[in-house]
Length: 293
Image (tube, rainbow, N blue to C red; front, side):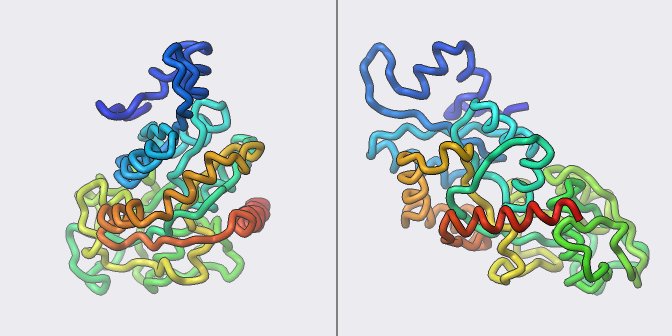
């Protein structure tokens, strides 16, 4: 379930044999190159990583992106050692994934907070949503909880006060417009717009689908303290979190060249955040504790 492009190697191509894989990771091929290859799992097109790869090359690092078309796969690939890093998820999703897959994946840097919005092809304003409007929202616990919060902030529903980050439709206490919620795969939410009144869509997913982020009926605030659990991160296996080359990649991600591309690709909607890795891991632990509520 890997999306392949001419400039990106697929996971299968990289893993043709244990010997070939070892050569790729260490860069110790017959040519004697001392360059290290680091594969980064991403979801969808991530042009900022193309820019980063060019900058990394100048420092003797070969960075290759491996594109996944299913959010459930990059953490499994990282945990299995098939890639070295991934950069596609926020802390809530990572906490959920670590628990479900029994992996020990740790954030090493924050990248951006991407707004979560309510979009529609049939209605131009929030007030135009009719009674019993059908709204699609992500079905995974991490993004569904956030989507429900967006609907609450938009005053379409109310949730229990103790619903937490992993709220479900069962936590709804008021629904004045009697909106109907249809859970779907987060990456498929744009496809539901033709058949629903509206859909909760991550701005990154919306951008990939060619949806103008400025057309959202409502969005959450990426600069709010409530957005901290939804910081997107670069992640590594916990026992490699202090790798010196990974630290170089983190520094490159914060560089002007990469951040200019982040702003361009997101039409200015992605909010870059720099937070020490130790604070990210503390937040991850805090989020993980809510999973057992």
